[in-house]
Length: 445
Image 1 (cartoon, one colour):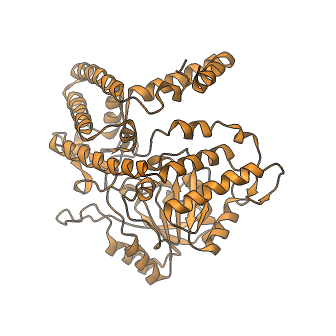
Image 2 (cartoon, helix red, strand yellow; image 1 turned 30 degrees about the vertical axis):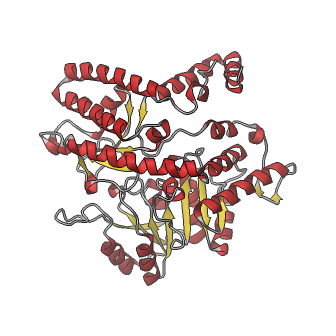
Image 3 (cartoon, rainbow, N blue to C red; image 1 turned 60 degrees about the vertical axis):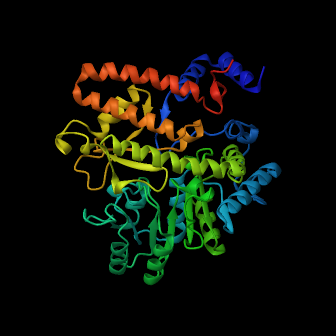
């Protein structure tokens, strides 16, 4: 009997109701194609590190300066995670305690700005993040965001890419204390050096939230924000393929100290030491040659998927992708365009019924509401973890086209095609089982 079997049996014997839910989720992940750009499948080692005895300890403070005794091994694992994070990103300081990317962002804001201070970020509807200025989020409620857009000119070769001239104009007008780059739905390479030049011109700090591309950066597939950014935040899941959590990085010792104080005791209490242990394991994986090859495949798979979707008549915003994410404009596929029935909300539901999981997402200047949208966001980290290659991504594009075309035909045709595609998805997933297989949930036994 394996350790996985022991864990599965223990949960079943103690709490069969909870075990059944976990088992159902394990089966869902095993039998569906995960295309949500911000999700991935962590390795068995990462998942099991997150479930260790490290969860039993309060370790408020930082290594060598804890508020509780008995933290010897917690100091060691946190230091290990810090050192590996610094090596991954080539920086001098790392804080591995943020519970999430949003809390990492909040800590940086608290450390480097006062309530009411102005900062500049991308227009949220153009692919920004809720923690970059959504009015009801801390970032929009306590601070003063001003926004720069993507290029609006459809005749421009840079259409729907960052408008660096507009970034400069916004910063010259508003003199922000901080300039923020990094996005949740932007498919192109970020020019960090150009952002730093603008920040320097107006006397702003440059913050890079690289949550979506941090794995690509660690794997050498996207330019690093260092040495350009004053401070960098990221999640540790998404393309990085670790446990759910956050990370703050910098080369500036004073900024590091300020962010550390803002995070603890400013925002958080005891760190999640079991998650920090899992971060250490994930960061160790990210330092291998195999990981670099994995990140290369993510890029190749995204390119293959985007090109195949274009061949099927879909429009990819900005014309394609440089990274792992693509934003699909569904109106180009619907004869009625923005007046038609092919919305992001409908597409998300139809595809999930067929075993293809994605998320609705607004496109730049989307006329539809955020809970409806005219687009879907797709990404390739999870399918690449699964072992898919370019040929499988072309199959996936065909699945998507068949389902959405059937949806426009009518309910009867949608039901028929959805059933067919669901069977084909199961067969494809069966040929490419997840690295952890059933043992990742409670289905082992």
